[in-house]
Every structure is written in structure tokens, then in C-alpha cells.
Amino acid sequence: MSGVVRADRAIAAVAQAAAEQGFAVAITVVDTAGVLVAFRRMDGCMVGPVDVSQKKARTAALFGMDSTDFGQVAQPGGAIYSIEHTNGGLISFGGGVTLRDADTLVGAIGVAGATTDADETLARAGAQAY
Image (cartoon, rainbow, N blue to C red; front, side, top):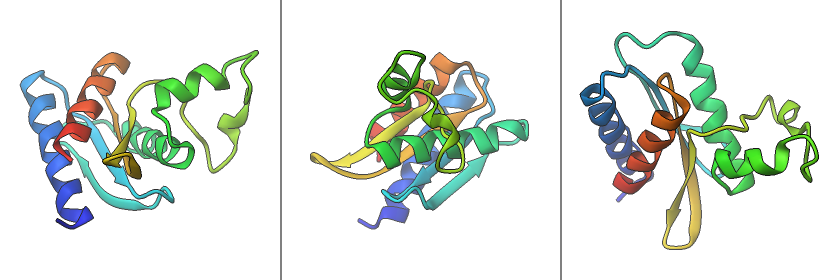
């Protein structure tokens, strides 16, 4: 199955779960280089989450770890503190989740527009559907 088909399936799963929870979110899927594969901005989603969802996905893809885990090492005192200002801007909180085929990194999904916890849960649902 192609990456675009899988990305569309992940986005559909996130959009359905978000709608059921009363959220309107932005959903981004990128490849391992952080390049856009698929995107959806749900009706009612503010403009700000568009950029945030893309940065969450890029962060997870470029560093091969979920944005929550990235945040642990990017905080003051962390091994890579202040790295968020590189690569066009990175995100160090939840909502960016890696996409893997077996153990191989194939990309990432980013969700923004709900609460941080909900973004994380929705992104994980998308990763599972991928």
C-alpha cells in the first residue's frame, strides 16, 4: 500500500476521532525528511494549528522520536536545549508521533488544535491507523 494511501487512512482516523470528541484539528503527515505527504485542516480549525501540526510532524520525523520524548531532551538542562530554533522551528510538546513500518521509521504524523493531551492521543490513533 502506498504511503499516500496510508497517510490518508491515518488522517481520516484522526479526523473521525477528533470530530467525535468535539475538536477541529489540523493533521499533517510527513516522510522521514519532514516533507509533506498529506494534510487536512478540519472545518472550524483555527489557522494557528496548521503550522503547529506541521512542526510537530517534522520534529518527530527528523529526530525519529515522538515530540513528547523530544521535549524531554530539549528542555532547560536537557542534552539539546534550545534546538527548537533549528530546522525551521521544532515543537517540544505532545502531538507529533513517529510512523513506523515494523521498526523502520517511515515518517510522522502531527496533530494540533485540541488540548496537548488530546493532540497526542489523536496522533497515536492516526499512527495506529497508518
